[in-house]
Image (cartoon, rainbow, N blue to C red; front, side, top):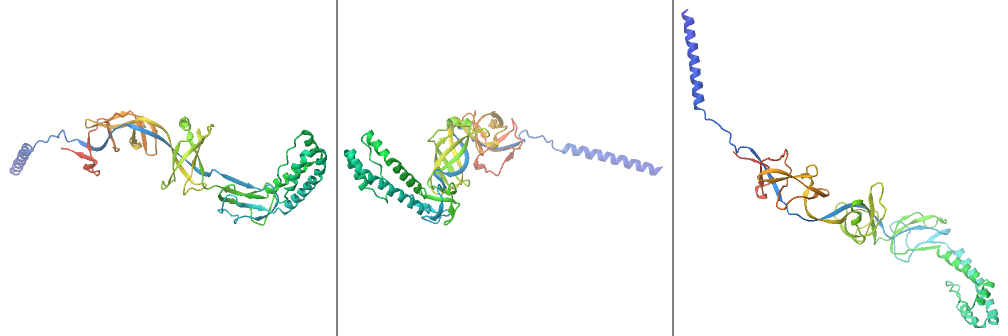
Length: 383
């Protein structure tokens, strides 16, 4: 009995001690109240808006093609026996040099025979002219005396009267003359000369082979002038004009050239709804088939501002800072570039958020950072 009483007294004592200790702890603890200024404040970089006039530049691309291009075809048959240089791709020829010559010995002999027959007809014509048309005999005698079988046939003297013309026709003078001229024209076709200085880009025959009429022989281009065909959206079609200057560059943007619009097709490509536009360009480093990008200045938009495309929300809204909190404004995109967009609707002096903020919302407290604060800090908190 005594043991139970002792244990009960000890238990009550422990409970009393615990209550006293708890009360002392609660009375001595300092009360903590959250600081109203203790919210997390995100740091942002801003850009002050200043509207200007922006050039709307259309970027398009295409492959270069020589403006002066000659596809070589044969009009005659024979053995390919001569060229001023080796008839191979990449060979350069000066203007007037022989690209390809087909053996024309038979044609030369036939021409000389025809010229000889014509000369004989003229010689037999002179005595009759002296009898019937003495006034015309002098000019024909001069023509005969100047006749040279090694040179191209000169034009016939013009008859003074209709009777004289009929007399010449009756002697087949005109028929014989045009037979000779026809052979002379055919003989020219046996030799293909370079119409301008340039280079062979394709060859399909070798020296010594038999060439047939209509056979393609190769391609020859002028390396000094090129054309670039590009496709321009129809919305800018009315802004393109012949003579407009165009900036061109290679894909790596290590080389640049200045071209000029020389033709604008009047027909729209139905599949792509674009207008084929042709740009002429010359300069060092250009080659046939080279891929180039063109920056065509279509028009100028006033009161615009250029922003990073990543900052646009649904392509029509932007975050700004107003009274140390985020706000949002609507803008009108005018033109999209590769990484930026030209927009309207921002007022001068507006503080535009210049960096993307994860989880941003209207009314979000922010702290504006300048470049002096350092780009490493993206958020701050105040207690």
